Amino acid sequence: MAAPYACDPAQSRGRLYPEKESAFRSPFQRDRDRIIHAGAFRRLKHKTQVFVEHEGDYYRTRLTHSIEVAQVARTIARALGLNEDLTEAVALAHDLGHTPFGHTGEDALNVLMAPHGGFDHNAQALKIVTSLERSYAGFDGLNLTWETLEGLAKHNGPLIAPVPGDGPLIAPVPGGGPLIAPVTGVLPFALSDYNARHDLQLHSHAGGEAQVAAVSDDIAYNNHDLADGLRAGLFSDDEAAQLPIVSAAYAQVDRCWPGLDRKRRRAEALRRVFGVMVSDVIDESRARLAEAAPESVDALRAAGRQMVGFSGRLFAQLKEIRAFLFLRMYRAPAVVEMRAQVTRVVEDLFPLYMARPDLLPEEWQSDVVAAQGETARARLVADYIAGMTDRFALDQHRMLLDRA
Image 1 (cartoon, rainbow, N blue to C red):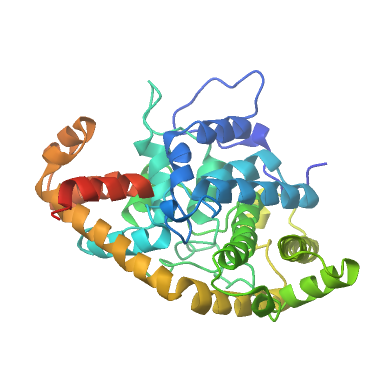
Image 2 (image 1 turned 45 degrees about the vertical axis):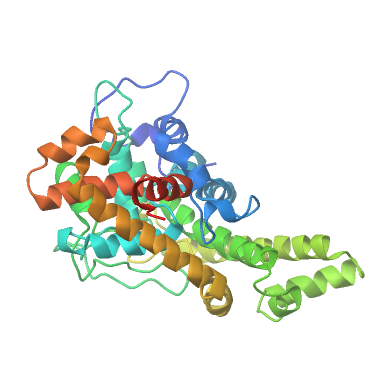
C-alpha cells in the first residue's frame, strides 16, 4: 500500500508539453521507459566510474552502476511505501550528465568552462532530458514529468535558499544527503535556464522517491568501489577486512564457511556490507518518517531535512571507508597517472573544437557557428564533449591530435 507521502502518478503535476496519457502505463512508467530508450542512457555502457573503459571488462561502468542503483532504490522505495516507478526513473537517469572518464573528465571540463558558468553533471543530466535528446517530433528532450525532473535536479537537497514564508532551511542530519552548492552560490546555467521555464521549486527538498535514489547511489558506489578496488589489486582482502562494517562481514563469512576460497569469501562479505547499508537506510528512514509524520508528499518536501538516509552511526563508519578508498584507490599511483592522461584529452579537445567547429559532426556544426558569443559556443562544445564515451574521446584525441 502506498504511503500518504508517496508521489501519486494520478496526481502528477504533468509535463511541460501536455501529452495524451498512455492506456497501459502510468506517467512515471513512461518516464522510466523514455530514459531507458534514450541515446544518453545507452552511452553509459562505455563511461566508467573510476577506471577508464579499456582497462578491464569487469569494472563498473555508469550503465551497470545505474542499474545497480535502480535495483537498490526499488527495494528501499517498496519498504517505505513510496512509488517504485518514479524512484526507478530518477535512479536510472541520475548519471546521464556524466562526462567521459568519470569525475576526472567532469573536473577538467568544469575548469575549462569556468569563464562560461562552469560544468555540473547533475545540471547536465537535466539538460539532456529537457533539451539535448531529440527523438520526438513535438519537443526537444524527453518531456518527463515534473516529479522526475524535480528528482534529477535536487535529489541531494535544496539548491537555493527558501522563499519567504517557507521557514528556515535546516541542514540534514548525518547521512541524509548534503545541501549542495549553490545554496550559497550560483545555480548552474542548465538548471537556472530550465527552471525559469518550468519551476522545479529548487528551494525545497525533493519527494521521497528522489531521496531514495540519492541514498541508493551512495550504497551502490560504496559497495562497488570496494569490489573494484579489490579486483584491481589496489588493496587486499586483509586490509579491507580492517574497515568498519566490512570487518564484521568478513568475520561472519569466516564463521559460516571456514576456508572458503578467496573469490567466494569476498563476494559473500561484500554482499553482507550491501545488506547492512540497505537495512540501515530503511530502519533510519522509517524512524524519521514516523517522527515527522508527513501526511502528503508536499509535507515531506517541506520537512526541512532529508527524510531518507543513513543513521548517524553508519554514516560515520562509511566516512572511514570513503577516506580509505580515497587514499588507496582514487589516489593510487596508477589511477593518478590515468587521471592525468585523460585530463589532457579533455583539455586538448575543448580548445580544438572551439577553434575548429568544422571538426564537429555535421549536426553540431550549424549550431556552433550560429551561437551568439563565445559562451554560447563553449556550452555547445561542452555538451558535445560531455556526451562522449571514454573510447570515443580517446579515439578522437588520437585521430585529431596525435602527432607522433
